[in-house]
Amino acid sequence: MGIVIAILLFGFIVFFHELGHFLLARKNGIRVDEFWIGMGPTLVHKKIGETDYCLKLFPIGGACMMGEDDADDFSEGSFNSKSPLQRISVIAAGPVFNFILAFICGFIFICCVGIDKPVISGVAEDMPAMEVGLQAGDKIVEINGKNIHIFREISLLNIIHPGERMEITYERAGIRNTVSLTPVYDEESGAYMMGVYSNGYEKGSVGEIILYSIYEIEYWIEMTLDSLKMLFTRQIGMDQLSGPVGVVNAVDQTYQVSKSGGIYLVFLNMIRMAVLLSANLGVMNLLPIPALDGGRLLFLVIELVRGKRVPPEKEGYVHMIGMMFLLILMAFVVFNDLKRIFM
Image (cartoon, rainbow, N blue to C red; front, side, top):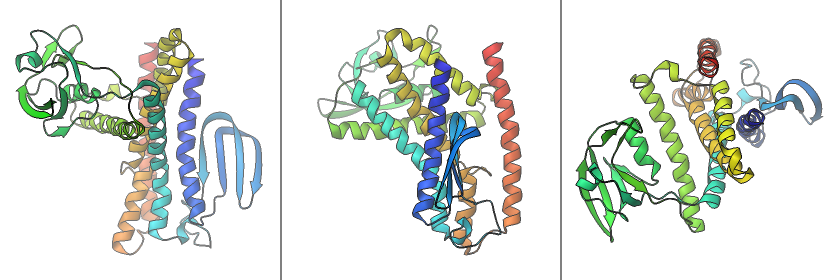
């Protein structure tokens, strides 16, 4: 059951991404030849206007075919016939819709669970936080110049900057103070810790829920970017990369852990996974990698600045090389995922 939920969840997130491309294409008068829901053999299809709407066998994503790869088609309603700004809006719509979906799911999660404010509920004895005078009720507002909005950001900073000295600004009784401390390594958890406990989740007003839904997206975007940075700086290895197989396995494991708590707990954890996956997909698609949305956006921005298109054959070669690289990377990632699962 967990694997089925994982496939449906991941498929819906990809479908919502393609829906963004589709809606902005139609808004800009771009002809959409086919719009799929699912993948594989077509079960049913119906042509409405110029678009063939298809429902396919496997519920894993979708596709929006609007002729953007046909470099010679400048006919009325074609992708290439539109201005650079119109084409940018269509390509950017996919990742933007991922962030919109992440916000919606984050909003639902926070409505159900509450807000994760960076307020200390307690301080561990003989730990750095106690030594510098932090107390229960203190609200951490800044660490090393970075604004802190949710408690989990503290743990994330300890992961990204393990053992580094921290300048912490906190608020107590409306007054802000700053202290310095160096997290210490905790053998039991295998992580660096300051020694502070979360105040837990608390209910908030509608305005707070909206604001903290944005903070939730920001948190997952930062986590994705920081993970990429750690990959390039070799803080984490290539063998820790994960792809669709790993995502399905992670969702399945979350389901297996959650199901003993009932349907409601499963629902909450799947909603949180949806925030993570949708924000992650949005970020990855905006990276300036050929063949991805970010690579296409880069060429469109260059066209906007130059006032003329990059020769289509040159752009096509770059995207082809990018696609080959992505296929090789995908094969490597799938191998990693399978090795972790079965070995």
